[in-house]
Each structure stands twice: as structure tokens, then as C-alpha cells.
Amino acid sequence: MSWAETLLDASFRGVPLQVLDESLQWQRALSEHGTPFKDGDSVVDLGRGARRFPMQIIIYGVNYEIELQNLLSALGQRGPGELIHPIYGSLSVVSQNVEVKHVADSPDAAQVSLLFVEDTPDLPFFDRQFEFVDIGVLEQEDEYRWQDGIFDLFGRIDSLVSEIQSWIGGGWVGLIEKALGLPGIFLRVQQLRSQILGVVSGVVSMAQNPSAAYDPLVDLFRTPTQIRSSIQDSTPSSSTALLSRSGVPATMPGGDGLTTEPVRAANAFLISARQGVAPDASLLPDRMPDDPVEASGFALVVLVITELAVAHSQAVAIVIEDESKKPTLSPIELEGLVNLVRSLLQSAILLQRRLYDVETSRPVIEALRNTAALIQARARQVILQSPPMIEREVESPASLRLLAHRWYGDHSRALELTRLNPGLKAPHNIPAGEILRAYAE
Image 1 (cartoon, rainbow, N blue to C red):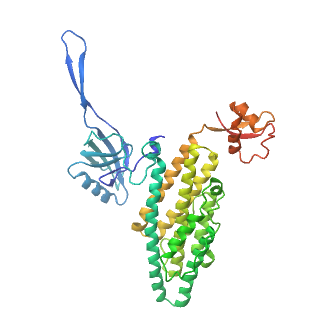
Image 2 (image 1 turned 60 degrees about the horizontal axis):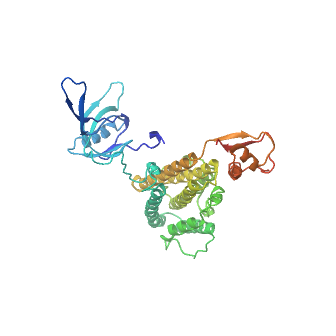
Image 3 (image 1 turned 180 degrees about the vertical axis):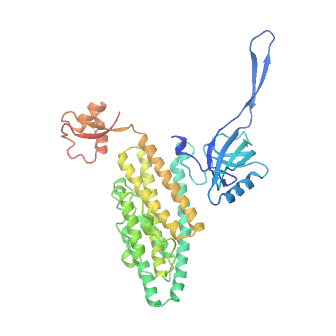
């Protein structure tokens, strides 16, 4: 895995750094003792000095002056500070040299040259500290395995989403109060009640669990809990069921009771997830609508999509880890699972970003984004455990066991060929000229 795939977001004392280039320098103190009339010296190594980290960074954009002021303020503080190096991770350093350069041809931009000197050389080098979970944990097999990190992250997402759900549940009180001041109050309250009950009953039916009837306008906080438990119960755990998309509904559950815009956006996101493609952000408004009925509909869509994304991420993470021990899926099938999760997570991120304020949505968005990156990186690592895949032509009629013997000298690898070629109709009678996917060795 190259450094281009594991770079960290650089910062100093919490101020982000856009790094153009960097280098690492150090010197060792040597004591040299010469002997008269004898060539060469005896050299004693007295230890390494502090590591130095020269950096070139750039600050640009319409707000570059504010960003430059923040950086200079951080650099002006006395004593050591934390540097998140893009390659080496968390380091305790002191800022020694600073040079800020402006060029006439580059307005609204500044180039800054920095030199950081390591403060505590006895700390372990290349030791990373992760705020959530970085894909660097994939390489730590002994003390902290990747699945430990991702399930810790799922727990963090669960708590964050629960906070959002509480906010949404409490928000329905405000929607009802807003409806009281609008014309047609009776109709609007009935619409709120019917669409909430419709979505909850639709989600519950996915899990085939009976639910006791309740009035959502009286017991507001039951709705998020009902949706979460039903989606978790209806999410499949096997790779076959996940690949069939059986846990992702074709349309918004109970969507008939919702207003038009939330249903259209939700159904488009569900179709994108089932196809494993990126969702269309143009279907969402720039903010939560003022109309209480439509706002309630979008809040329900946020709950359903976000819970689908988290539940499927957990299920796929378990499948990927099982694949690392005993492969049963082809690389194409693994890619299909990752695309399913990524599309659901992207949909949840778009909904949170568009409909809620930054303070509310940012923690959830960052956790969802890191989940997507971690699952994708781990799936790629599992795929790369196997030799490269190629297409091979069957030279003469044969069965899969005979082909496995010819190509690998091991007839038991016929099961592997079956897995890599799920569309093969006659595995016991393969004609000459047939093209099959197979590992190179």
C-alpha cells in the first residue's frame, strides 16, 4: 500500500495545512578520533539529534487571509504543539522557521515555508494517533485489528445517529406547533400522523415483526427506535442475500403516505444503492423545507436511509473479514458489496449535509465517510491477497476439475473456478474456445 492511499489530513495545533511538499532531516552526533601516521579515524556514534520537518504549504481562496491569521497565531505560540504529519502521523514539535511569501501573479494566496523540530525524540517514530479510524489500522494485525477499529466506529456512529434521531423526534413537536398556526390545521395534523405511521409500518413489515399500534404525535420518540430496530432485523447477514439486495427496499417503505418530493428523493437513492452507483444530489432541497408535512417526510427519509447505510456497513464488514480467512466470493462480488455500502453511505451523507446545519451533521458525516473509506480499503486488501485475475481460453473440451488440474495441478481448485465464473451454465462440459476468469497462478 503506497503513501498516496494512506495520507492523513495535515494540521498544526488543530489548524489544517495544505502541504505541497515535505522532507525529513536529521543528523547524528559523531566523535572522531585520529591516530598520527594512520589513515582513517575511529568514529563514535553519540546519538541522533532532533528530527526536522521542512514543509512547503499553500493557503488560497477568498478566505485565505483568515486562514493565514489562524496559522500564524498557532505558529506564534510558545512551546511544543501537535503536528499531524500527512505521512508520519502525530508528532510533538516546535516551530523554528517561518517564511510567508506572496506573489503578484497569485492573488488571494500565500506560500508558507515551515520548519518543525521534533520535541520528544524518545517517542516511537511513525506512531499514528487516529481521531476516528484511519485506513492505516488495516496493517496492524496484532494489537489493534481493522475490525476492532471499524466496530468501534460503528458504535460511535450509533451514538451520533441516536442524537440526530432524538433531535428529529423533538423536531416533530416543532412541526406540529408550526402546523397549528397554518390554514387547514386538521388536515395537516392528519397528514403528519398518516405519513409517520405509514413509514414505520412499512419498515416494520420489512422485518416481518408485528408492531403495537401507537399515535406518533403523542409518542414522538418511539418512531426513531422503531425504524432502527426494524431495519437492523431486516438486514441480511449472508453474502448471497446482501448481493441480492434483499435488505434494500425497491421503494421507500410506506412511501404512499409521504409527500411527493421526499418520496422521489428516497426512491432515487434506493435505486442508486441497488445498482451500486453514486446518488443524484440534485433531487434534494438546499435546506429543510418550511412546510411541516414535507419537513416531516424528509426527516423520515433521513432516518431510513441512514439506518440502512449503517446496518449494511456492519453486515458487509463481517462478510469481508470472513472472506480474508476463507474466500467464497469473486472479486466482482466483493466489489458489488462495497458499491452497495458506498452508495447507501453517500446517500446518507447527502441527506445530512443538505437538510441539517453544520454543527448537527458534521460528526455524522465524518463518521460515515470514514466508514466508507475503511470498508473499501479492507475489501481491496482482501482482493489483493489473491493472485492477479486473468481471462484464459479453454483449449479443448473439459470439465472444471480437469481444467483446474491442467492450469494449477490441483483439481480441488475447481470450486474456485466455479466461484469466479458464476454464469457458467455447464461446468461439467465446457467447450473449446470458452473464455473463463481465473487466477494467474
